[in-house]
Length: 447
Picture 1: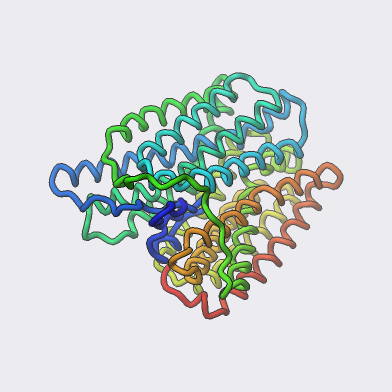
Picture 2: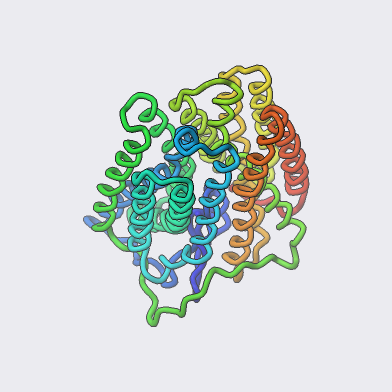
């Protein structure tokens, strides 16, 4: 998901800003960047085309692994709690620092690949995540966790703002006549799938292998290092502008002619991100404290189920119109959150896993539909700036509500807190979706 550059920005959901169709197909993580200021090189043939094809898949796997790398701590938070003696509130604060790191890098550096090239920024993002892992491996206290998660968030912002643009351009280079849908589908799977894949692997390793707070970082670190070497020799797709434009952060704009639609879409994205935030921060604590399920593998699997559900739903419904997508999203959101609540009150783990899968699918649909609406109402000349505001709101949803939940569970039973959260989330999403789904702006093509 990168913003436009100073002069001639381009799309990017986790990709570029070129067309409404591509932005609307983007996944959940950060999409504020854009395409090359100078158009990418013309589609090559023969050996060059094969090089672009190979680079496309190497980049996709690196994208997935680096996103997974950033989510490794999710099933390990319970172990950090035991070691450093802190409560659920501190988990949410640590997670909020991650979200702040993502926001900062998106708006300060998400568009830099338009100027210096995709490979350089993507490799820098990997280096930043490795620096974060080094902090985790250094047996940090609470302060170290806060710093490490913030740095990891910076890596995610740079990755999502660059990798999808790079995937789209590599795909065009390998298959100049092919539709862009494959690149969008792969980017969605790598982005959301990676956020779920990391906790799954980390949870299994923590449960069944030695050194649970070290081995997951080593495994992902080695994987991204090997993949980074392959990306380093891959074709570059950006013609760097000469002279390079002066640096400026990504601008944020709200479209005057569609303020109501913009704020409704942003509210929908904020709430869907809040739902995802529960799975990447507090769900392991809920599993251990309320359902009495202490398996790290299960904690990782629950997070994986939520993000896999989002990735699968976005991929399967890639050709669905925005209005239809938004209308269809209400049922899985309501059913999924209902299953989660029932699971916490009945102590049924299977219900909790099913609720995570269904809720993730609905939240992914909501976010994708909201993104399509915002793209459709954003003036072409300021699309990147409008999307920057949209993602700012979305990432507020990833941090502030989760911190609120962490605070609430200190004073009230987790079941009651979850019940209130579900009620508020359902009302907020339903209100936003019904407004967006019934408006003219939502009557646009496939997301």
